[in-house]
Image (cartoon, rainbow, N blue to C red; front, side, top):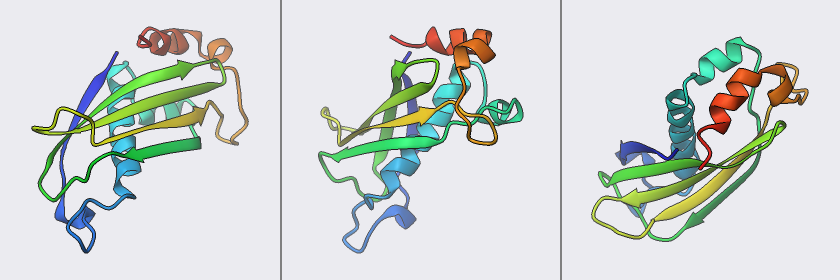
Length: 137
């Protein structure tokens, strides 16, 4: 499954040069990841209520072209890899009217409990793990 999240770049996200600041892209990734999880059938909030956390262990972010205030942005999100202990998301960011991506990135997360102790998602929550696994292309 590939989800598409849409954002209009806000003025507060720009730097002194009028370009979207580099630190904004991981925030956009988070928005897109949250929407992906929701479209997979569960919300982040519900997972946290169940005691499932997804702390970040790795982040990549590659800038290909600048984005500016009021640019219409689409973030395509997919699962790059899924194991019982980790999940990795991939992000491709497009600007309206531009064919090639303006940004690409990924985030790697571990499945942990509230004490940040890793656990085997497939064993602890088999139905949820299967639902998420069914979104992997």
